[in-house]
Image 1 (spheres, rainbow, N blue to C red):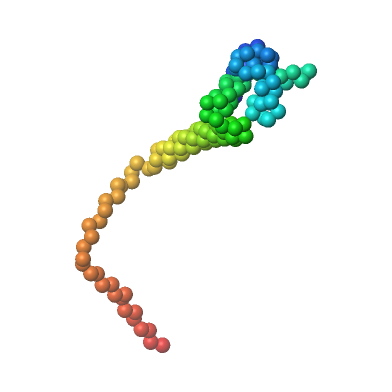
Image 2 (image 1 turned 135 degrees about the vertical axis):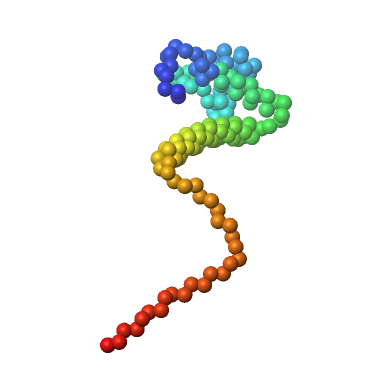
Length: 151
């Protein structure tokens, strides 16, 4: 949620408002088909305190999708259930990826700010580094000879 309080009377596509007869009419299916889909776990509407089914606009869209996959594509109900599960899993993963991308972007911005602060703290009297030109000269170093002490 985005932190704002929602109006409790605001209708969204998730709001369960349609009784089974209306949902059946809107989806073009028989009420018994909706009950069967609920028993199979294909489309599970919310329930009232009296255990009556209440369908949302999203549920009705899902009923239409189930019908289309079954009738037009010839997919059996077990296959449709698996498709729905996988689509829900993909949606959840996409949401998680978006969250992680946002977190990474925030961390990158914080890192850039810290890096800028470190650069700003550098002393300004430092001399820029200049690369030394490589030569093939050989320098031999010999340690100075020690003087021997006589006892």
